[in-house]
Amino acid sequence: MPSVPPIPADNQSLATPEVSSPLSSVKKSRNSGRRRVKEKREGDRRLIELFARNMRLVRISRELTQEQLADLCEIDRTYISGLERTIRNPALKNIQRIADELNVDVRVLFDPDLDEAAANTLYGATGKNAGAR
Image 1: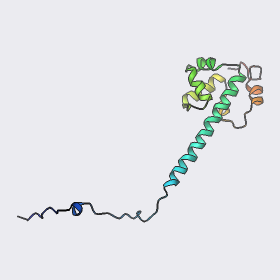
Image 2: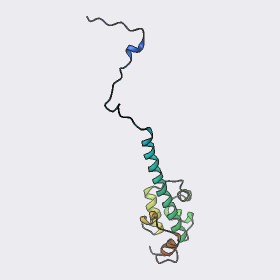
Image 3: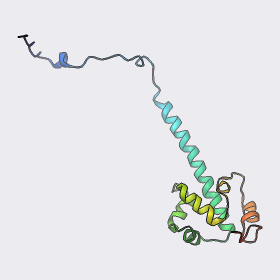
Image 4: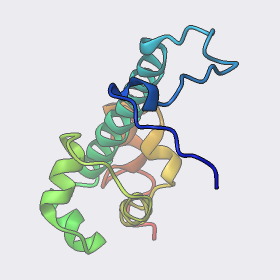
């Protein structure tokens, strides 16, 4: 029968030995990942702000209140308000619902060149697309 070695008085000999990894010599930058995430979030933020601005421009040019648009889309008025104030992230299905009820292509809601004059001319209640459904 093999003999069992005695338990050492200090627990250090029981500790797991450090295993060196091939990547252990590569210094990892703690901030590089955070910087990429922050840049991505800033890009997302700009996209949400663009959507909110354009949705509001088209909604106002259509002479709709937030409540009227919400009723047409069958979503809550506070959700529309949150979208316009950029405190809510729009779900894809809601982006499509809003575009459908505003009678615009989804791309219009993300058009960086859309301004108030263009929205009134193209999508206003008296514009060439008024009432076209």
